[in-house]
Image (tube, rainbow, N blue to C red):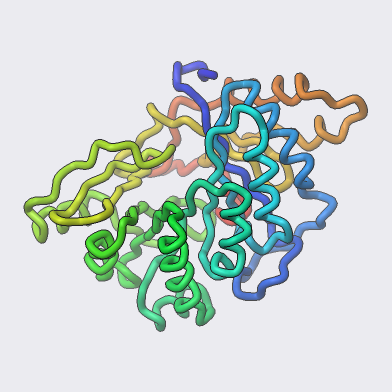
Length: 323
């Protein structure tokens, strides 16, 4: 399925938590209002949306949150989506705290890859960023995932005067493991508006200076917009997702769905379409859901306005949007 600008849309990010059914105190950020369970989509409703999405040409799905593994049955949802005819891939983005506990279940249900959000390898900085002492659990999850043959990407968001000096330590992980480390520019959404991020270009120049033999990696690494490089002798690659300084809207291939069933054509803007209303209407059909999905794709803007001084009108936190 293509949008009005000719971009092929084949990927959906699905948030399954909005801090409504927490069972893990290590996963909850401060300042988030809780949502009633009745207001978020059931797994059966999510499966229906995914089945309709496949009918429109969307065949790749990312399970996100908030933190998706705090929701009971997350691995089973992976299996439900994977069993839909036509689905090519189901992956998961997690903070890694609970990943070790549920890794075997995720593998049994067919998970294709995991992205682990990790912004430091220093215990004190991890505590500063997250408020908790869970770094060891995350590191163990990474190792165990690799040992089980699961494809792993680490998402690292550098911030000035917080973790910006750790860029080389993260890059060097690719020398040790067959892993992708992605440097992601801070998005000005929610708390991100108050943070000072580091541009991907700045880290890339530092890496080129330190590793002059570094070469661009043209192989396919996933569904996202990252540009990859490989350090000399590395087993894995380093990637750059530069939403601000390397705007990639011309190749955007995705839509997002919040835990409450809002389909968003673009992270930057508040605009969304409520597919929950259609799901819970008497006589709801796959065809009706397909119509809503096509409508959302038709509303995708040509580009976001982050960095323009406008900043868009989305005022919710990233954990509420499945970013």
